Length: 285
Image (cartoon, rainbow, N blue to C red; front, side, top):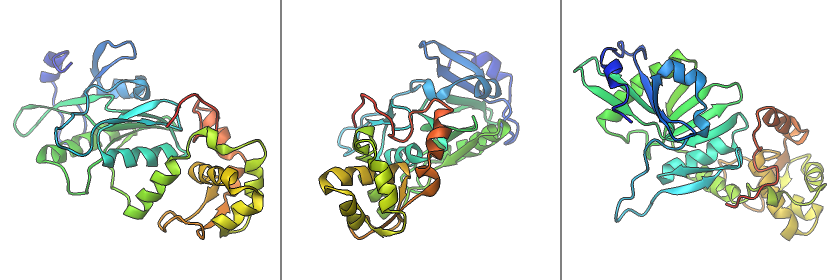
């Protein structure tokens, strides 16, 4: 894919951090290798629907290998290549402003002004926001992780995204407690955990004021049936609790008035998303 359109790119220059002269290489939904000027691609391509332009490597001896994340936002799977990337997928999948997710859908190419060499970079994640703008992101294991090439690419990608009203970020890993809580709640993101009709309304009433998680669940009914719905509601945001603190039976939980009233579902429905695990589907985690 890098060879397609390179003669055109050779005559262009990434002008001193302005993001000009950057091109986008990707495979269309039909599998056709394509290269466009970045500004044109950002405005016309649904990167959330595209397959990765390159696979995540399998490294012998490494404890972590590539895997698949089922997205409650889209009802589809997104590939990931590291533990750091997986936790960022969880965060984005839970964000009510995110309507689409994909991994490595585009390669950006530019001519380095310092030495004239052709450079390229494949951001690990793409997220579509409800307003139509996009986020390109990488998921380092720590803020200082990454080679010099990653730092060089950062400036070019930030400028290229700014040109089209998007954002490029190197996502900061969350604190360990937050990550652990997200992993637990993510296990209940699928709609099958929301319980029978009327249960969410009962949870909203039970947690209208902050109360311990186990206490509120017991007030609604059989904990074996109610607790999965509580965790599902916490994932979706209908119920809230401080994720910076360990999640346990005494954690204070309360209902989120706006989301419990249907605001999130209405916003997501307008963009064709499947919610944060709020609707039925055939996928499993």
